[in-house]
Length: 208
Image (cartoon, rainbow, N blue to C red; front, top):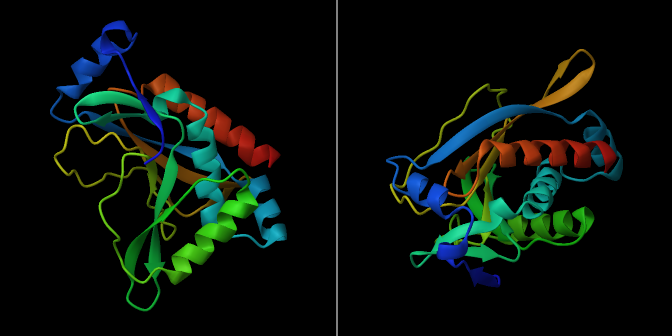
């Protein structure tokens, strides 16, 4: 497990908001918006890198830079992780069943994609165990362009792991657009933080 610090909730600015949403019947919510991947696609294709794994890295890098995406509940306490790693679904083409692959974050996109591709190819088991708190979950659905997506609910209110999805990119007015979704726990992440992620991610995709 990655290093973390326990938050003193009596002195934490978000303590009241956290408790209010923590007690909701459904404390998580999902937002879908479009991301322009025109320039990113060109660069990724030129470098002959996996678009999916490259985007996993890009999203994780941007989300890691926003503190609110690194908060979790752990043993009843609020903790803030120093860094969050990744866990993504990877389709077995023969069985059409997915496996969940855990990969540590790296400093560079190229290094992450290389490591993730190798690990995904070598992993035989569909599931290697329960996901830890210190990951971002990814479950891309590149077969359809959607305008909304929902997720299964484990019923565990303290599950605060963000879940990122995207659909099939499409062309509009000469630009390649991607439906992108993020599900978060409202105890930690508000709309303003999703807005920060959207802006940061778009900037990264434009400038990579």
